[in-house]
Length: 141
Image 1 (spheres, one colour):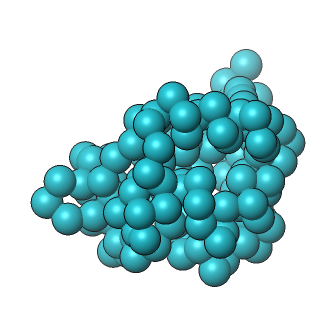
Image 2 (cartoon, rainbow, N blue to C red; image 1 turned 30 degrees about the vertical axis):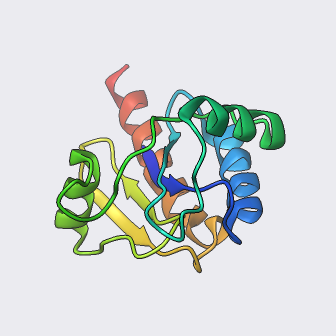
């Protein structure tokens, strides 16, 4: 189970989201769940630094332990293929930083939320998918 998020270091949502995302990673990861963070500078130029500086900031400030990818575009013709897929299959395109896409183990998008929806609000859906995955693996043993 993955929660794919377009992150930004200089956004009003940064502190709240990074703290909640790291707590989620700590509680559920890394065997059955991962936050996948994709820095993006498309909205308000709020991710201006280099990939190395972005990762250093996230790890130093929020003790982030989830994967941090290279800076990407999440909308428009130059959008990263992962975000093209997420947008097409969910019908929801990011309009700001900290859009969250919940992806099930089969690769299907199980939900998409804008930054005004907190990580805590979507935790029940994440927990349900992780629980289902664990039960399925248990049955296979």
